[in-house]
Each structure stands twice: as structure tokens, then as C-alpha cells.
Image (cartoon, rainbow, N blue to C red; front, side, top):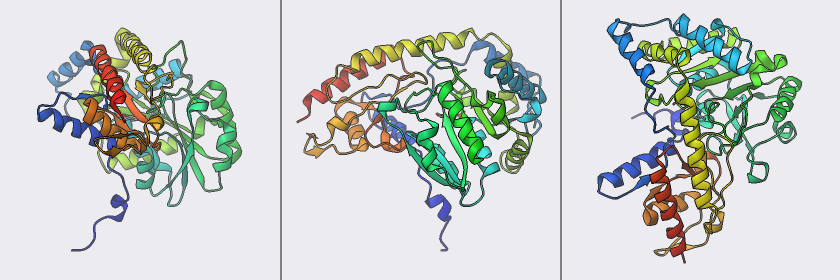
Length: 397
Ligand SMILES: Cc1ncc(COP(=O)(O)O)c(C=O)c1O
């Protein structure tokens, strides 16, 4: 038979999903595995949001909506972006999609031509390079490290910019590092975007989950770059609405029209019921958000306190999101059951085998010396997992 799509052969499977599936399989076999691998809040969706969805069904709000999203939700998103993020936008500049991932996919399809370079700071969220490839673009990786808190500046970015640079992807707070980019750094990067004429895709899906009094800053609020910034976000993380699949873009109208065209020929509108729920999430009581944020901050503190004394891993303190990204480099060369640990994947296999804790290898995020720990889990599970990790390491040869 004729060969299938080369483009798809060139795309990696999402390793976060692969590890979750492996942990689920072990659990199904009766193993007591604690999985700290998923990137999804463990809280229920707020009650008033669920009620709005039930009401939408009862009112037969169950048909296609406008491809771009309902006018009410687009307006509500625009108004949130204006008041909370300081982004000058309107409902007509907003596209509602089926999740943040879909919004980002549409944005890359809207701007990329074959061979266009898109700069992605590493460690990066797993889907960024693959989405760039799916848009026929070329991912260009900018390495960051612990010394700079996994952040970067215009000056570290400058050497990677070429005439083919079409865009830079910024994800602050970051998955997997939890790094938060300061306003100063973002202002410097905005100047560079103007100097070299590139777009900025700013993935702000973790904007509500910041700690230590940090304030989220949206690069799209800087007037000089307003037209070249595509702000992407959604309801999955802040409102614990991962299954509802609602995300959005705010950008200049030409970009929105192109992204909407892609959406119109692929998925069409996001679920009408979920859009009604998202509207209520924005308009209704937001007190659950702060409760969730505080719980995440508390869990981060517990985990850091426990893991910072464990020899063999070093744990940077993240400023946002709900992940730790410790280095496991010190475990390289050590052995268990005759196996040598020499990569992040080996380290994850070791933790799964000896601590029965499922983590995600840093290699999936472009860093082979780290593992990702999600703390979107109960304090009980986190405490138990940290103890198991510590005692597993103490058995290593
Ligand atoms: C950085 C980042 N962007 C976007 C998304 C996509 O979120 P959604 O579930 O809304 O598609 C995720 C989800 O894990 C993420 O971590």
C-alpha cells in the first residue's frame, strides 16, 4: 500500500498522555501507583458553571452556534481581557475554540507559511513544536535553564532571530517549569518583536495560578505590539474545566478571520453548552478561583519543603502554574536492578518501578535532565509520593 502521511510520521505522540496511560495500566493491574503526571486541576468545576450548562440543555441551547463563538461569550472574553489584562480588544477580535490547544493550533495555521521559523523557549509545553510542524513551520528552540529561573530576555533571544522568524511563543506561567516572565523582560521582548517584525503568540492559560504575590502581565497590553500579539487562553486550568473544551484567541482581525476560517473547515463552533458554561464562569462568582489558587500554592510549598532535602534531585521554586520541574541530573550514572539511569525517561521509569510514582520525563518538554511533577493532586497523595520518591532514591546504588 502507498505510504501514509509523512507530516504525521514527523509528529511526536504526546508523552504526557503516554505516561498517564502507563500509570493507569499499572493501576488496573492492581499496583498502588500515585500518578503526578496529569496537567489538570483535581477540583470540580464550580457549581454555578455546571448549573448554567444544565440550563443551556434544558433551554435547547444545543445547536450549532456562530463558528467564531456566541457573540455574548466573545464580548465577555473581550471585556475580561480589557479589564483584567489591559488588552485593547473587542468581541470581533476574539475567536472561541474547542480548548486552548485548539486555539493555539488555529493561530499557527493562520500565520505560518512553509519554512517559517517559530521560536519556542525550552522547556516548552509538549504541543508547541508539533503544532508548528503541523503548520509547516520550523520550530527553533531557545534553551533556558535554572540559573535564569527558566526565563529569557530580549538579549538571549536576539541571536536566534533571522529574516525567517515569523513568531515567538511565550508561555507564562509556564508548563512545565512554572516560570513567570516579568513585565520588564516582556517589554524588552516586545521591542525586539518590533525591531525584527515578528508575531508573538502568548499562551496565558495559567494566568490565574500565580504565587508569592506575583502579578501576571500580558504582553498584548503593550500598545506598540498590540497588533502583533496573539493572546491565547482558556477555561481549562483556572476554572477547572478541562473536559468542557473552551479556549480562545484575541488578535488583530485579519489573524482572527484566518484562524476562524481554519476552524470553520475543521471543527466549526465549540460546544454550545460549554460556551454557555464559560459565559457563566466569566460573569458569575469567581471566589472558587482564589480558593483553588491558594490550595495550589499550599501544595507547592509542601512539596518543595519535602523534596528540597532529598539528595539526588534539585527543585527550583516555581512562581506559577501547578508543576515542579526538578533536575534529576545527579541520578545519572546510578543504578537499580542492574539498570543505569542516564536520561529523564530512565529516571521516570525508576520512579515508577521503585516508588510507584508516575512523573513525566523532561525530554518531552525539551530538557533531558529534568522530570515534571504535577501538584494538581491531593495533599495526601503529594505527601505520600514525596516520601516514596525520597526512599526510592535512598536505595539507589
Ligand atoms: C501551556 C498549555 N497551553 C495550552 C494548554 C491547552 O489547554 P486545553 O486543555 O484548554 O486545550 C495546556 C494544557 O495542558 C497547557 O499546559
